[in-house]
Image 1: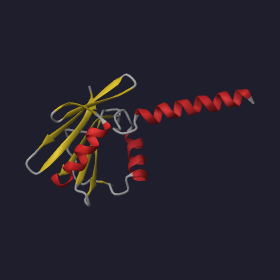
Image 2 (image 1 turned 180 degrees about the vertical axis):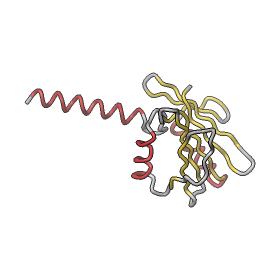
Image 3 (image 1 turned 60 degrees about the vertical axis):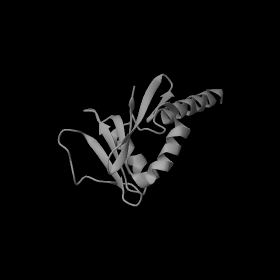
Image 4 (image 1 turned 45 degrees about the vertical axis):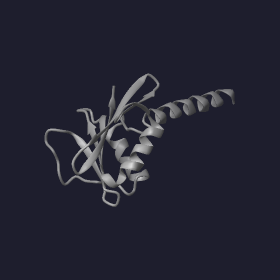
Length: 138
């Protein structure tokens, strides 16, 4: 009985750290894992495969209701290396509040987060028609 408890404990610890590693930004996650999570947890986002840029490997999700587009940029091994979210300006107050609550502010439109030993930079860039939030490893 003790051996099974140890195995259960180790599985629980591994699951906790694996889930936490990808908890919010998807960086380091495999393409198939992203698709499963988006399909299960973000039903308002739909995968758009109609427009493909041949210079980049990415998944493109759109939420037409809230006018949000998310690009998950992938490495040659299909691992997420960068996340870029594009928003209509009607979302700016909610996004700023979320960024200020979830991340440590480091500048006017920059934040950072840390999970275990990995640091991530978060940057908000204002465009003419929309604004973008980019998350990447530091």
